Length: 227
Image (cartoon, rainbow, N blue to C red; front, top):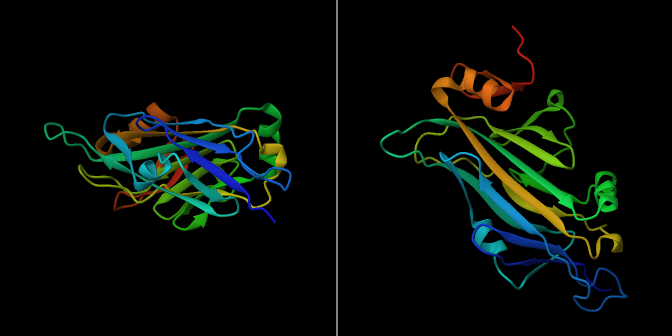
């Protein structure tokens, strides 16, 4: 029985190309009909940058992985505020994906073939902020199959890094021929606010209200302010 593969091809800078292609079924013996899609990785704030070994690995032009396994993509954030204005920051990351076909988007919402792992565990579905939970050092506030919204629970000092917000990208073994020519676009964006104004900055910038512990860690993110 022929194996199922995903191809990861290279692009420029922080752009990587991910595609479904190859022999997804016995009727395909090579990389016929392979697709490609740009993965856009950007920082929404000049004070944090996305780093990680996954960027280098995903830029390889001849990497194949078997569907049903994971592709390592260890991504973290670094506080890069300069020496003149060294700010401790809180960070938010948004990971989103979409297929190049509306029907495939609808199927993915039902089939749930693509996932992410944090702290070694596949991230659970989270439809609303009321269902949020902690995965490693991150709060998963949303993961509805289209967009995953994460908040780092700890303040990040200048020069410090977070733990990984993505350990790997997971592709289910049951993905079928409907996705053969599909192009899946991943987007990752990072944002930050200063620690000394977090209770005002998060509502103003992100429209959410953080609940902090005595040590300054975020224990909950609320969409409405409750006294």
